[in-house]
Image: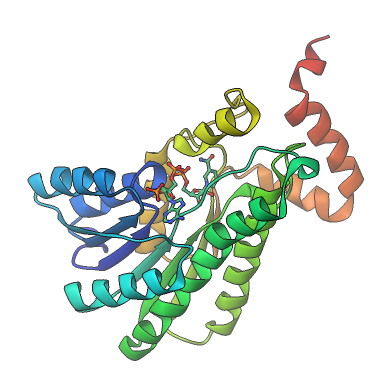
Amino acid sequence: MGKANGQVVLITGASSGIGLALAQVLAKEGAKVMITARRKDNLVKACQEMRSSGGQVDYYVADIAVEKEVSQLVEHTNKHFGKIDILVNNAGYGHFLKLANTTSEDMHNIMEVNFFGTFYATNAVLPIMKKQNSGHIIMVSSVAAKRVFRDAGGAYNVSKYAMQSFAEALRMELLESPIKVSIVCPIVTATEFFDLAEKQIGKKATLSGPIQTSEQVANTIVSLIEKPKAEVMMLKPIRILLALNALFPSLVDQIIQRFFINPEKNRN
Ligand SMILES: NC(=O)c1ccc[n+]([C@@H]2O[C@H](COP(=O)([O-])OP(=O)(O)OC[C@H]3O[C@@H](n4cnc5c(N)ncnc54)[C@H](OP(=O)(O)O)[C@@H]3O)[C@@H](O)[C@H]2O)c1
């Protein structure tokens, strides 16, 4: 049995993609899982499937951008399972427009979900974990919280950088406490995340470079539960680029322009 067995895990953004894959792995491992998102049909179906194979799973519909709904979600989870061992802040969405075409409303909306949603859930869970004198908060951040790799969708980077620095600040504040904070930085993951591109820019997002699956990210999160770490970068060589970025950011601009944004240039 893994370490997740018997642990109560609250996963936000679990109606699809990474959050759903994580719930499925944890349910198999014997964790007590509360899944949440806005799409009730998805949550009900996921719950039924996991329960049919013995999973101890429940769902709660909430909009992560609404603080009251998030505090009710946390209260409900704590009452239902009697404790909350692990919070996985995973709810989030992408953005595919250039900054020049991004409205204030777009920027507010994405900050409300990707940053404030994380803030609301963490704030609601912390008093419970402090009382328990144990807990683990896991942030599903992104490589997009470390460096901008595209020439559009900057609002997403802004929101993820905010989430990342919130996570680091919290980790420092809790360094001496029994409550752990971990960050996972996935690279491109094949999920519904990219569906929004068609709506925003009128064409499907082209996924380039190494692409991972939701299950790979889920398994990495499970290994973080087994052995808490400050941060996991899902594609290790990215660290080299980030180190180079700390020293020579304009050189990295050129590398990204050539190899990430216009990779076809290299075929001439
Ligand atoms: N896919 C990638 O390439 C990639 C790479 C790095 C990091 N990430 C991060 O991974 C996380 C999960 O994304 P994914 O790739 O699994 O995409 P996904 O399949 O689109 O999942 C996103 C989840 O967030 C939920 N969500 C969005 N807005 C919400 C809101 N206002 N209230 C409550 N829940 C909300 C969605 O549920 P409802 O729509 O049902 O509410 C859904 O369950 C995100 O934080 C994303 O930034 C993704």
